[in-house]
Image 1 (spheres, rainbow, N blue to C red):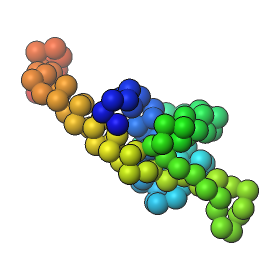
Image 2: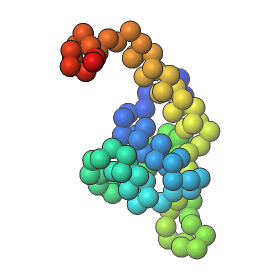
Image 3: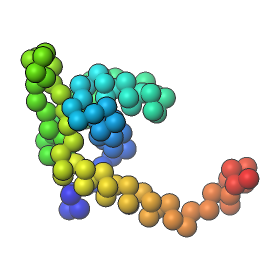
Length: 109
């Protein structure tokens, strides 16, 4: 993944929501989890567009649910898991050395 573009914030949220809901997640479950954790309204269209884009990149895969053959379920691939780890490491490196109390005196305590 390191040669590819880094994950966008919403892509990261969607992939983490897939992982949080289990090994195979429906789009609606992903939407609910993103909304629950972020506190923001998310359109189902945005979720599916992101899942489709992530699938094209090889970061998630999809299949049909056994009981409900028309519903797609999504899972994070090993390449997707690597991308999530890289994204987290990059974010943590960027936060190193940031002193919030200098920027926002009320936050630092």
